[in-house]
Length: 482
Image (cartoon, rainbow, N blue to C red):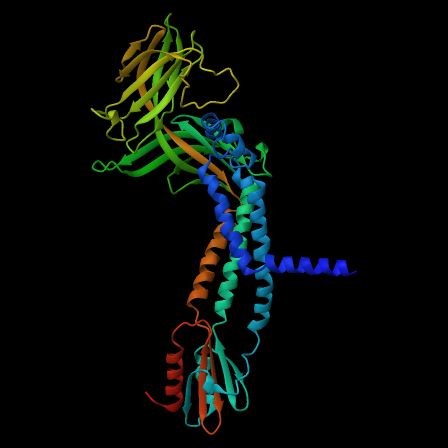
Protein backbone atom coordinates (compact mmCIF):
# COMPACT_ATOMS: atom_id res chain seq x y z
CA UNK A 1 0.00 0.00 0.00
CA UNK A 2 2.86 2.34 0.78
CA UNK A 3 4.39 1.69 -2.64
CA UNK A 4 1.07 2.55 -4.30
CA UNK A 5 0.83 5.84 -2.44
CA UNK A 6 4.40 6.67 -3.33
CA UNK A 7 3.71 5.96 -6.97
CA UNK A 8 0.66 8.18 -6.92
CA UNK A 9 2.61 10.95 -5.24
CA UNK A 10 5.35 10.65 -7.82
CA UNK A 11 2.87 10.78 -10.70
CA UNK A 12 1.15 13.77 -9.11
CA UNK A 13 4.53 15.51 -8.82
CA UNK A 14 5.32 14.74 -12.48
CA UNK A 15 1.96 16.16 -13.55
CA UNK A 16 2.53 19.36 -11.56
CA UNK A 17 5.94 19.78 -13.17
CA UNK A 18 4.58 19.15 -16.67
CA UNK A 19 1.70 21.59 -16.29
CA UNK A 20 3.76 24.43 -14.84
CA UNK A 21 4.18 27.57 -16.94
CA UNK A 22 7.96 27.22 -16.72
CA UNK A 23 7.78 23.78 -18.37
CA UNK A 24 5.44 25.12 -21.07
CA UNK A 25 7.92 27.88 -21.92
CA UNK A 26 10.81 25.40 -22.01
CA UNK A 27 8.84 23.08 -24.32
CA UNK A 28 7.93 26.02 -26.58
CA UNK A 29 11.63 26.86 -26.84
CA UNK A 30 12.47 23.20 -27.54
CA UNK A 31 9.85 23.09 -30.29
CA UNK A 32 11.50 26.05 -31.99
CA UNK A 33 14.92 24.42 -31.69
CA UNK A 34 13.55 21.08 -32.95
CA UNK A 35 12.20 22.80 -36.08
CA UNK A 36 15.64 24.17 -37.05
CA UNK A 37 16.85 20.97 -38.81
CA UNK A 38 13.76 21.20 -41.03
CA UNK A 39 15.12 24.41 -42.54
CA UNK A 40 18.75 23.24 -42.68
CA UNK A 41 18.22 19.85 -44.38
CA UNK A 42 15.98 18.98 -47.37
CA UNK A 43 12.75 17.22 -46.45
CA UNK A 44 11.40 14.15 -48.25
CA UNK A 45 7.85 15.47 -48.21
CA UNK A 46 8.93 18.68 -49.95
CA UNK A 47 11.82 17.80 -52.23
CA UNK A 48 12.82 14.12 -52.44
CA UNK A 49 15.30 14.86 -55.25
CA UNK A 50 17.30 17.18 -53.00
CA UNK A 51 17.35 14.46 -50.34
CA UNK A 52 18.71 12.01 -52.92
CA UNK A 53 21.34 14.53 -53.97
CA UNK A 54 22.33 15.05 -50.32
CA UNK A 55 22.95 11.30 -50.02
CA UNK A 56 25.14 11.46 -53.13
CA UNK A 57 27.11 14.48 -51.88
CA UNK A 58 27.43 13.22 -48.28
CA UNK A 59 27.50 9.41 -48.40
CA UNK A 60 28.88 8.98 -44.87
CA UNK A 61 26.86 11.66 -43.04
CA UNK A 62 23.45 11.27 -44.73
CA UNK A 63 22.63 7.75 -43.40
CA UNK A 64 23.27 8.89 -39.83
CA UNK A 65 21.07 11.96 -40.30
CA UNK A 66 18.38 9.73 -41.77
CA UNK A 67 18.46 7.47 -38.70
CA UNK A 68 17.46 10.47 -36.59
CA UNK A 69 14.75 11.55 -39.09
CA UNK A 70 16.52 14.78 -40.06
CA UNK A 71 15.00 14.46 -43.55
CA UNK A 72 11.51 14.00 -42.08
CA UNK A 73 11.71 16.38 -39.14
CA UNK A 74 8.06 17.30 -38.73
CA UNK A 75 6.86 13.70 -38.65
CA UNK A 76 9.76 12.41 -36.54
CA UNK A 77 9.09 10.81 -33.12
CA UNK A 78 11.16 13.36 -31.23
CA UNK A 79 9.45 16.38 -32.85
CA UNK A 80 6.02 14.82 -32.28
CA UNK A 81 6.91 14.12 -28.64
CA UNK A 82 7.84 17.76 -27.96
CA UNK A 83 4.72 18.93 -29.80
CA UNK A 84 2.38 16.67 -27.80
CA UNK A 85 4.05 17.46 -24.47
CA UNK A 86 3.67 21.19 -25.17
CA UNK A 87 0.03 20.65 -26.06
CA UNK A 88 -0.65 18.73 -22.83
CA UNK A 89 1.38 21.18 -20.75
CA UNK A 90 -0.52 24.22 -22.02
CA UNK A 91 -3.92 22.61 -21.47
CA UNK A 92 -3.00 21.35 -18.01
CA UNK A 93 -1.58 24.74 -17.07
CA UNK A 94 -4.19 27.10 -18.52
CA UNK A 95 -7.47 25.20 -18.17
CA UNK A 96 -7.54 25.08 -14.32
CA UNK A 97 -6.51 28.75 -14.21
CA UNK A 98 -9.32 29.62 -16.63
CA UNK A 99 -11.90 27.82 -14.49
CA UNK A 100 -10.70 29.59 -11.33
CA UNK A 101 -10.65 32.93 -13.13
CA UNK A 102 -14.21 32.40 -14.40
CA UNK A 103 -15.33 31.80 -10.80
CA UNK A 104 -13.43 34.86 -9.54
CA UNK A 105 -14.92 37.24 -12.13
CA UNK A 106 -18.22 37.44 -10.24
CA UNK A 107 -16.58 37.57 -6.80
CA UNK A 108 -16.50 40.73 -4.72
CA UNK A 109 -13.24 42.66 -4.22
CA UNK A 110 -11.25 41.78 -1.09
CA UNK A 111 -12.12 43.32 2.27
CA UNK A 112 -10.65 46.69 3.20
CA UNK A 113 -7.33 46.27 5.07
CA UNK A 114 -7.20 47.40 8.68
CA UNK A 115 -4.24 49.74 8.21
CA UNK A 116 -4.44 51.74 5.00
CA UNK A 117 -1.46 53.92 5.92
CA UNK A 118 0.84 51.02 5.00
CA UNK A 119 -0.34 51.01 1.37
CA UNK A 120 0.63 53.10 -1.63
CA UNK A 121 -0.41 56.74 -1.96
CA UNK A 122 -2.12 56.90 1.41
CA UNK A 123 -4.17 60.07 1.78
CA UNK A 124 -6.38 61.52 4.53
CA UNK A 125 -9.15 64.00 3.83
CA UNK A 126 -12.08 65.44 5.72
CA UNK A 127 -14.95 63.11 6.44
CA UNK A 128 -17.16 62.68 3.34
CA UNK A 129 -20.25 60.77 2.23
CA UNK A 130 -19.26 57.29 0.98
CA UNK A 131 -22.10 57.35 -1.55
CA UNK A 132 -20.22 60.02 -3.46
CA UNK A 133 -17.07 57.85 -3.58
CA UNK A 134 -19.09 54.81 -4.65
CA UNK A 135 -20.72 56.64 -7.56
CA UNK A 136 -17.38 58.02 -8.77
CA UNK A 137 -15.59 54.66 -8.62
CA UNK A 138 -18.43 52.88 -10.44
CA UNK A 139 -18.29 55.54 -13.14
CA UNK A 140 -14.57 54.79 -13.57
CA UNK A 141 -15.22 51.06 -14.11
CA UNK A 142 -14.39 49.72 -10.62
CA UNK A 143 -16.23 46.79 -9.08
CA UNK A 144 -17.44 47.76 -5.66
CA UNK A 145 -17.68 46.02 -2.29
CA UNK A 146 -19.58 48.29 0.10
CA UNK A 147 -19.23 47.80 3.83
CA UNK A 148 -20.65 49.91 6.64
CA UNK A 149 -17.67 52.24 6.94
CA UNK A 150 -15.59 51.42 3.90
CA UNK A 151 -15.51 50.80 0.17
CA UNK A 152 -13.25 48.24 -1.53
CA UNK A 153 -12.92 48.89 -5.29
CA UNK A 154 -11.10 46.88 -7.93
CA UNK A 155 -10.70 46.95 -11.72
CA UNK A 156 -8.37 45.37 -14.26
CA UNK A 157 -9.63 41.78 -14.23
CA UNK A 158 -9.30 41.91 -18.00
CA UNK A 159 -5.53 41.63 -17.56
CA UNK A 160 -5.77 38.06 -16.32
CA UNK A 161 -8.46 37.38 -18.94
CA UNK A 162 -6.07 38.57 -21.66
CA UNK A 163 -3.27 36.46 -20.22
CA UNK A 164 -5.44 33.33 -20.26
CA UNK A 165 -6.79 34.18 -23.73
CA UNK A 166 -3.22 34.36 -25.00
CA UNK A 167 -2.32 30.92 -23.67
CA UNK A 168 -5.60 29.30 -24.72
CA UNK A 169 -5.07 30.75 -28.20
CA UNK A 170 -1.68 29.04 -28.36
CA UNK A 171 -3.51 25.77 -27.80
CA UNK A 172 -5.84 26.64 -30.69
CA UNK A 173 -2.82 27.39 -32.90
CA UNK A 174 -1.31 24.02 -32.00
CA UNK A 175 -4.62 22.33 -32.84
CA UNK A 176 -4.70 24.10 -36.21
CA UNK A 177 -1.13 23.10 -37.03
CA UNK A 178 -1.86 19.52 -35.98
CA UNK A 179 -4.99 19.32 -38.16
CA UNK A 180 -3.05 20.69 -41.12
CA UNK A 181 -0.22 18.18 -40.73
CA UNK A 182 -2.61 15.23 -40.31
CA UNK A 183 -5.34 16.08 -42.81
CA UNK A 184 -3.60 18.41 -45.28
CA UNK A 185 -1.59 18.08 -48.46
CA UNK A 186 0.89 20.24 -50.36
CA UNK A 187 2.18 19.95 -53.89
CA UNK A 188 3.85 21.84 -56.74
CA UNK A 189 3.30 21.66 -60.47
CA UNK A 190 5.10 23.53 -63.26
CA UNK A 191 2.83 24.28 -66.23
CA UNK A 192 3.57 25.92 -69.56
CA UNK A 193 1.03 28.32 -71.03
CA UNK A 194 -1.46 26.05 -72.79
CA UNK A 195 -0.95 23.07 -70.46
CA UNK A 196 -3.83 21.44 -68.58
CA UNK A 197 -3.53 20.26 -64.99
CA UNK A 198 -5.87 17.67 -63.48
CA UNK A 199 -5.70 17.34 -59.72
CA UNK A 200 -4.37 13.78 -59.57
CA UNK A 201 -1.10 12.61 -57.97
CA UNK A 202 0.57 11.94 -61.37
CA UNK A 203 0.11 15.59 -62.41
CA UNK A 204 2.34 16.92 -59.62
CA UNK A 205 6.09 17.47 -59.70
CA UNK A 206 6.19 17.28 -55.88
CA UNK A 207 3.36 16.07 -53.65
CA UNK A 208 3.16 15.34 -49.93
CA UNK A 209 0.21 14.13 -47.83
CA UNK A 210 -0.65 14.38 -44.15
CA UNK A 211 -0.60 11.20 -42.06
CA UNK A 212 -4.34 10.62 -42.48
CA UNK A 213 -4.56 11.68 -46.12
CA UNK A 214 -4.22 9.57 -49.27
CA UNK A 215 -4.26 10.00 -53.03
CA UNK A 216 -8.04 9.68 -53.24
CA UNK A 217 -8.51 12.69 -50.93
CA UNK A 218 -7.56 15.27 -53.61
CA UNK A 219 -10.31 17.65 -54.72
CA UNK A 220 -11.55 16.88 -58.26
CA UNK A 221 -10.75 19.93 -60.39
CA UNK A 222 -8.79 20.85 -63.52
CA UNK A 223 -6.88 23.96 -64.53
CA UNK A 224 -5.85 25.05 -68.03
CA UNK A 225 -3.25 27.82 -68.26
CA UNK A 226 -4.54 30.35 -70.79
CA UNK A 227 -2.15 33.26 -70.41
CA UNK A 228 0.55 34.69 -68.18
CA UNK A 229 1.62 38.33 -68.11
CA UNK A 230 4.51 39.77 -66.10
CA UNK A 231 5.16 43.50 -65.79
CA UNK A 232 8.57 44.89 -64.84
CA UNK A 233 9.95 48.32 -64.02
CA UNK A 234 12.02 49.41 -67.02
CA UNK A 235 14.50 51.26 -64.78
CA UNK A 236 15.04 48.89 -61.84
CA UNK A 237 13.98 45.61 -63.54
CA UNK A 238 11.87 44.92 -60.45
CA UNK A 239 8.58 43.06 -60.95
CA UNK A 240 5.43 45.20 -60.79
CA UNK A 241 2.67 42.67 -61.29
CA UNK A 242 2.01 39.05 -62.30
CA UNK A 243 -1.32 37.99 -63.82
CA UNK A 244 -2.19 34.37 -64.54
CA UNK A 245 -5.34 33.63 -66.50
CA UNK A 246 -6.71 30.10 -66.23
CA UNK A 247 -9.87 28.22 -67.08
CA UNK A 248 -11.06 25.90 -64.34
CA UNK A 249 -13.59 23.10 -63.99
CA UNK A 250 -14.77 21.77 -60.64
CA UNK A 251 -15.44 18.88 -60.83
CA UNK A 252 -13.47 17.73 -63.86
CA UNK A 253 -15.69 17.67 -66.96
CA UNK A 254 -18.05 20.39 -65.78
CA UNK A 255 -18.39 23.80 -67.43
CA UNK A 256 -15.14 25.79 -67.35
CA UNK A 257 -14.85 29.28 -65.89
CA UNK A 258 -12.15 31.88 -66.48
CA UNK A 259 -10.28 32.86 -63.30
CA UNK A 260 -7.44 35.25 -62.51
CA UNK A 261 -4.66 34.23 -60.10
CA UNK A 262 -2.20 36.74 -58.68
CA UNK A 263 0.62 36.45 -56.17
CA UNK A 264 -1.57 37.50 -53.23
CA UNK A 265 -4.85 36.34 -54.75
CA UNK A 266 -4.99 32.52 -54.85
CA UNK A 267 -7.73 30.46 -56.41
CA UNK A 268 -9.70 28.56 -53.75
CA UNK A 269 -11.73 25.35 -53.79
CA UNK A 270 -12.89 24.83 -50.22
CA UNK A 271 -9.80 24.17 -48.09
CA UNK A 272 -7.65 23.83 -51.22
CA UNK A 273 -5.88 26.96 -52.47
CA UNK A 274 -3.86 27.37 -55.66
CA UNK A 275 -1.04 29.92 -55.35
CA UNK A 276 1.07 31.49 -58.09
CA UNK A 277 4.50 30.64 -56.71
CA UNK A 278 7.08 31.34 -59.44
CA UNK A 279 7.53 31.80 -63.17
CA UNK A 280 10.14 31.39 -65.89
CA UNK A 281 10.69 30.47 -69.53
CA UNK A 282 10.64 27.25 -71.52
CA UNK A 283 12.77 27.43 -74.71
CA UNK A 284 11.14 25.58 -77.62
CA UNK A 285 13.43 23.43 -79.77
CA UNK A 286 13.18 20.90 -82.58
CA UNK A 287 15.71 18.06 -82.44
CA UNK A 288 16.27 15.71 -85.41
CA UNK A 289 18.42 12.61 -85.80
CA UNK A 290 20.89 11.90 -88.62
CA UNK A 291 18.09 10.86 -90.98
CA UNK A 292 16.22 14.13 -90.39
CA UNK A 293 13.47 12.51 -88.31
CA UNK A 294 12.06 14.70 -85.53
CA UNK A 295 12.81 12.97 -82.20
CA UNK A 296 11.90 15.86 -79.89
CA UNK A 297 9.81 18.99 -80.30
CA UNK A 298 8.35 21.32 -77.74
CA UNK A 299 9.06 23.54 -74.71
CA UNK A 300 11.30 22.53 -71.80
CA UNK A 301 11.10 24.50 -68.50
CA UNK A 302 14.38 26.12 -67.41
CA UNK A 303 14.93 27.28 -63.82
CA UNK A 304 15.68 31.01 -63.20
CA UNK A 305 18.97 31.75 -61.45
CA UNK A 306 18.61 35.49 -60.86
CA UNK A 307 16.05 38.31 -60.89
CA UNK A 308 16.58 38.84 -64.64
CA UNK A 309 15.54 35.21 -65.26
CA UNK A 310 18.85 33.92 -66.57
CA UNK A 311 17.83 30.25 -66.55
CA UNK A 312 19.42 26.82 -66.67
CA UNK A 313 17.94 23.50 -67.67
CA UNK A 314 18.42 20.24 -69.50
CA UNK A 315 16.90 18.64 -72.59
CA UNK A 316 17.09 14.84 -72.61
CA UNK A 317 16.58 12.80 -75.80
CA UNK A 318 16.61 9.09 -74.89
CA UNK A 319 15.14 8.02 -78.27
CA UNK A 320 18.37 8.78 -80.17
CA UNK A 321 21.17 6.26 -80.52
CA UNK A 322 23.39 7.10 -78.74
CA UNK A 323 21.28 9.00 -76.23
CA UNK A 324 21.77 12.78 -76.36
CA UNK A 325 21.52 15.38 -73.58
CA UNK A 326 21.69 19.18 -73.78
CA UNK A 327 22.85 21.16 -70.74
CA UNK A 328 21.64 24.67 -71.48
CA UNK A 329 21.13 28.25 -70.40
CA UNK A 330 18.35 30.52 -71.64
CA UNK A 331 18.92 34.28 -71.61
CA UNK A 332 15.73 36.34 -72.20
CA UNK A 333 17.67 39.52 -72.98
CA UNK A 334 21.18 38.39 -73.79
CA UNK A 335 24.22 40.39 -72.73
CA UNK A 336 27.85 39.55 -72.17
CA UNK A 337 30.53 40.50 -69.69
CA UNK A 338 34.26 39.64 -69.91
CA UNK A 339 34.15 38.19 -66.38
CA UNK A 340 30.61 36.84 -66.01
CA UNK A 341 30.22 35.66 -69.55
CA UNK A 342 26.69 35.45 -70.92
CA UNK A 343 23.82 36.73 -68.77
CA UNK A 344 20.39 38.30 -69.06
CA UNK A 345 20.13 42.05 -68.49
CA UNK A 346 16.31 42.21 -68.37
CA UNK A 347 13.63 39.69 -67.33
CA UNK A 348 11.44 40.10 -70.43
CA UNK A 349 12.27 38.37 -73.71
CA UNK A 350 13.81 41.09 -75.87
CA UNK A 351 16.89 39.43 -77.38
CA UNK A 352 16.82 35.69 -76.49
CA UNK A 353 19.77 33.31 -76.65
CA UNK A 354 19.94 29.57 -76.03
CA UNK A 355 23.38 28.40 -74.89
CA UNK A 356 24.07 24.70 -74.49
CA UNK A 357 26.63 21.95 -74.39
CA UNK A 358 25.81 18.62 -76.05
CA UNK A 359 26.58 15.25 -74.44
CA UNK A 360 26.17 11.70 -75.68
CA UNK A 361 26.04 8.38 -73.83
CA UNK A 362 23.74 6.64 -71.35
CA UNK A 363 21.57 9.30 -69.62
CA UNK A 364 20.65 6.82 -66.85
CA UNK A 365 16.90 7.18 -67.43
CA UNK A 366 16.38 3.39 -67.37
CA UNK A 367 18.18 2.83 -64.06
CA UNK A 368 15.04 3.25 -61.97
CA UNK A 369 16.70 5.93 -59.84
CA UNK A 370 14.79 9.26 -59.89
CA UNK A 371 16.73 12.21 -61.26
CA UNK A 372 16.15 15.91 -61.76
CA UNK A 373 14.59 16.96 -65.05
CA UNK A 374 16.66 20.16 -64.88
CA UNK A 375 20.10 18.57 -64.68
CA UNK A 376 22.17 15.86 -66.35
CA UNK A 377 24.91 13.84 -64.68
CA UNK A 378 27.71 14.29 -67.23
CA UNK A 379 30.37 12.35 -65.32
CA UNK A 380 30.02 9.32 -67.65
CA UNK A 381 29.07 11.18 -70.82
CA UNK A 382 31.11 12.56 -73.72
CA UNK A 383 30.75 16.17 -74.77
CA UNK A 384 30.34 16.52 -78.53
CA UNK A 385 29.36 20.15 -79.00
CA UNK A 386 29.03 23.66 -77.61
CA UNK A 387 26.86 26.37 -79.16
CA UNK A 388 24.86 29.55 -78.62
CA UNK A 389 21.77 29.96 -80.80
CA UNK A 390 19.68 32.99 -81.66
CA UNK A 391 16.00 32.65 -82.53
CA UNK A 392 15.27 30.31 -85.50
CA UNK A 393 18.95 29.28 -85.80
CA UNK A 394 19.96 25.61 -86.21
CA UNK A 395 23.09 23.67 -85.31
CA UNK A 396 24.29 20.32 -86.67
CA UNK A 397 26.19 18.40 -83.99
CA UNK A 398 27.02 15.27 -85.98
CA UNK A 399 24.50 12.90 -84.38
CA UNK A 400 21.66 15.17 -85.46
CA UNK A 401 20.56 18.81 -85.36
CA UNK A 402 18.80 21.23 -83.02
CA UNK A 403 16.77 24.33 -83.93
CA UNK A 404 15.78 27.05 -81.47
CA UNK A 405 12.27 28.06 -82.57
CA UNK A 406 10.89 30.14 -79.71
CA UNK A 407 9.92 30.16 -76.06
CA UNK A 408 6.96 29.80 -73.77
CA UNK A 409 6.22 31.10 -70.28
CA UNK A 410 5.76 28.64 -67.42
CA UNK A 411 4.31 29.10 -63.96
CA UNK A 412 4.75 27.10 -60.78
CA UNK A 413 1.46 26.47 -58.99
CA UNK A 414 1.57 25.53 -55.34
CA UNK A 415 -1.59 23.63 -54.40
CA UNK A 416 -2.19 23.50 -50.67
CA UNK A 417 -4.98 21.85 -48.70
CA UNK A 418 -4.79 22.96 -45.08
CA UNK A 419 -8.05 22.49 -43.17
CA UNK A 420 -6.38 23.63 -39.95
CA UNK A 421 -5.29 27.02 -41.30
CA UNK A 422 -8.46 28.82 -40.20
CA UNK A 423 -8.01 27.56 -36.63
CA UNK A 424 -4.37 28.67 -36.60
CA UNK A 425 -5.35 32.09 -38.00
CA UNK A 426 -8.11 32.61 -35.43
CA UNK A 427 -5.75 31.41 -32.70
CA UNK A 428 -3.04 33.85 -33.79
CA UNK A 429 -5.48 36.80 -33.86
CA UNK A 430 -6.85 35.91 -30.43
CA UNK A 431 -3.32 35.42 -29.05
CA UNK A 432 -2.28 38.90 -30.19
CA UNK A 433 -5.50 40.37 -28.79
CA UNK A 434 -4.97 38.61 -25.47
CA UNK A 435 -1.36 39.78 -25.28
CA UNK A 436 -2.37 43.41 -25.93
CA UNK A 437 -5.12 43.22 -23.31
CA UNK A 438 -2.69 41.74 -20.79
CA UNK A 439 0.01 44.33 -21.45
CA UNK A 440 -2.12 47.47 -21.43
CA UNK A 441 -4.78 46.73 -18.80
CA UNK A 442 -4.12 48.48 -15.50
CA UNK A 443 -5.03 46.33 -12.52
CA UNK A 444 -5.90 48.52 -9.53
CA UNK A 445 -7.34 48.29 -6.05
CA UNK A 446 -8.53 51.39 -4.18
CA UNK A 447 -9.93 51.54 -0.66
CA UNK A 448 -11.91 54.33 0.96
CA UNK A 449 -12.38 54.03 4.75
CA UNK A 450 -14.50 56.18 6.99
CA UNK A 451 -13.30 57.14 10.49
CA UNK A 452 -12.59 60.45 12.21
CA UNK A 453 -11.31 61.31 8.77
CA UNK A 454 -11.66 59.61 5.41
CA UNK A 455 -8.65 57.46 4.51
CA UNK A 456 -7.82 56.60 0.90
CA UNK A 457 -5.12 54.22 -0.36
CA UNK A 458 -4.47 51.95 -3.33
CA UNK A 459 -2.47 49.09 -4.75
CA UNK A 460 -1.15 48.64 -8.29
CA UNK A 461 -0.93 44.90 -8.98
CA UNK A 462 1.07 45.04 -12.22
CA UNK A 463 3.29 48.04 -11.47
CA UNK A 464 1.89 50.10 -14.36
CA UNK A 465 2.18 53.86 -13.53
CA UNK A 466 -0.93 55.95 -13.00
CA UNK A 467 -2.30 54.86 -9.62
CA UNK A 468 -1.18 58.11 -7.97
CA UNK A 469 -3.04 60.10 -10.62
CA UNK A 470 -6.22 58.05 -10.14
CA UNK A 471 -6.16 58.58 -6.36
CA UNK A 472 -5.45 62.30 -6.88
CA UNK A 473 -8.49 62.57 -9.15
CA UNK A 474 -10.60 60.69 -6.57
CA UNK A 475 -9.49 63.08 -3.83
CA UNK A 476 -10.34 66.10 -5.98
CA UNK A 477 -13.80 64.68 -6.69
CA UNK A 478 -14.52 64.01 -3.05
CA UNK A 479 -13.17 67.30 -1.68
CA UNK A 480 -14.60 69.43 -4.47
CA UNK A 481 -11.18 70.73 -5.51
CA UNK A 482 -10.57 71.59 -9.18
